[in-house]
Length: 81
Image (cartoon, rainbow, N blue to C red):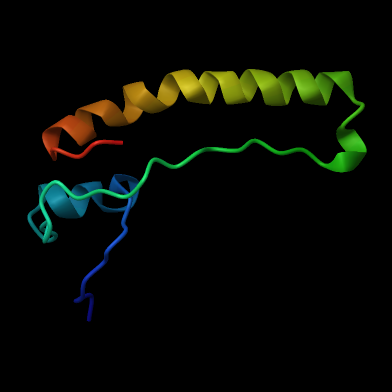
């Protein structure tokens, strides 16, 4: 029925529900530990320079984009990434 308690839920999955008031924090100030994003490639591609360069480039872009994407939400709902 869509009712219950989630103890570890990313804002990425519930932003709209929080904004609409359908979800509320039970433990204000509590947050899960920061997630670390991992970019992986197949072992068979480890010697492919183009694949490795792209994976490295993509990982670097995500490190830059993550704070810009989520900081406004973290601030709005008083959570620390």
